[in-house]
View 1 (tube, one colour):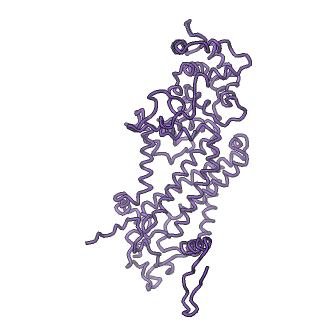
View 2 (view 1 turned 180 degrees about the horizontal axis):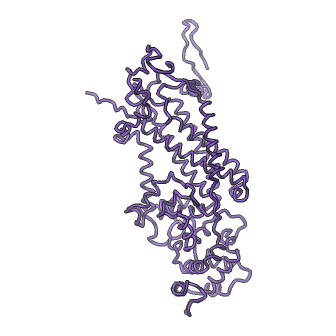
Length: 234
Length: 317
């Protein structure tokens, strides 16, 4: 950083950075200052059950990752022969089911809010990519059950993948290949896209209601609390 | 006259949706919400796991197939020898069978991908496993010196005879010119029933192998394995993608993918798979890029579900 301000005028100037690191820090602080990254308040309109499903999906993802790590400790066939392994496998399955349930509700909620408005299009697109990559990840998980179900899924699913030329490179009957995709490549992709999605949500904030107008009570700075409901002004 | 800006647009402009919110706020604790979410979802996960557990039906082996349905096993092995099985006629990526690939108009991605996982059903599924035995049957040598026409004639005659035999039982097949085929399929049946074929077919001559392609394809060419899937409601025409063994939910998020297989003209199309995948790719792209599509992006304004979501806000305007 080369200058903090002009001591002669007493006016705080925008910090200037000369190194790559400094410029990156400046860019990040400008786009996502700490109070936006970890906020202690939200706009008054963020008051609906629909808002809990995004966080619910992240919470479910935590359990997917934790249970997946435990399963990874002993390999894909462990849960066939261990009561504890079978229970951990059950938590992996049910956290995935909940993850998708929460994510689908979150996705459609955001659609009906038209949440891409006001420069939030990348937030919407990263959310969709997270959904699609999650579907592929879950699919590879079903192929790894090493039981009758995974045998049948491998046999059936090959046709759709072969028909579009993907099966030649992504062979669902090749357990080793699918295992590596499921425990390395795809979790990294899901985690990366979800992290980017959450950062974009924090950067751009939650989209305001459709048809919100400057004359709305919630946007009037001088209204008494009793007229505008709970909360404070940002 | 300038056009009125579309309120559903994704663009950043000088409007309320684009500006940082300057109105009333409510207290919010991100970490507290995350903690509550993790606790609640954790209780749900543990509760569902404890009460409902998870399915785990044992896999089918070539041994269990050969023991439970020897007639089906022999008929399938005969089809593999004669090159008339589903796998033998599949086309890319397993073999070069002409006109076997699925197409979308002139687009033939299956052929374009090439034969990257070559499978020669006669040799890979029958002859080579029999050659791995300590004392291979003389039938293997007899097959090796036979011409392609003889191979075709022998297997066709034996397949026909099997289909006419009582219970398709190989032991009750009438006399005919089947060459070494009955001996080959009989030896393979014995090998499978003893449990030797599973390892040989999967390992494919090496010690390590995590590729189950030959075993899965061989199993799928018979009627025993698909029959078990049918009983478990897992086949494509039973919305199998969304089902699991037992009464557990499968990949229910693939409901639309599964639905498309149930309706005409996809249902009876020889190109059903590429049609379904193409439709799903198109629909996924539409949803991904819906902010850029006039009309689709305006539906949330026309169908006012947002009135329910933000009912407190609208009530206090």
